Length: 203
Image (cartoon, rainbow, N blue to C red; front, side):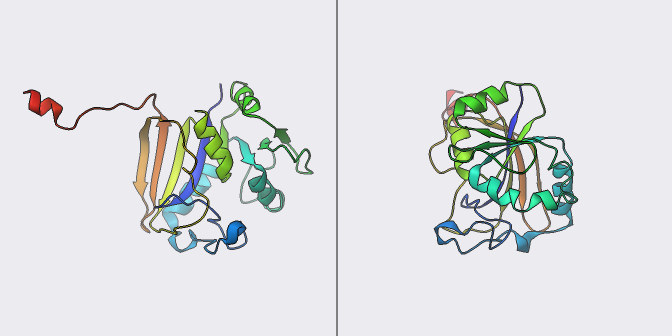
């Protein structure tokens, strides 16, 4: 079984829309495209390069795929393997692409079948609606989050349409010099509850 790994840059209020630039995704009149730019530093650059060198396939929503397909085929020198990795695209309207190694999926069942197949782990970048669908159906094995010290108050969010109750374990974390929190979480079963101070009161 393959892992599905969600990689997301988010603000303190959970916005994930158009982190890379003003033209990336201006849908719904979003005015803050490129909000990660002021927080770049050497630590972050090294982490990005490390992530991009990993062998992976990719699971994308249609809109994110269209953004990628217009850019990455000609910029593979920056992202080794992006052309060779299989791009799985969840879409009921898009059926073909000139970008090599692209496969189209239509349903959550198709994603589950993919997850149960042999092959490298599957990274999910951007694709807010797809991520929410994965969280709702308990298909996310890892969350690799970069949390930026900014709030935007509007825009597409990582957690927006009710993910299932789920526990995660923090497996790696650090803070960059510019104040970005890097936090990696692995899925860890059901939510556990209790009463704060109950053990103390019992004694």
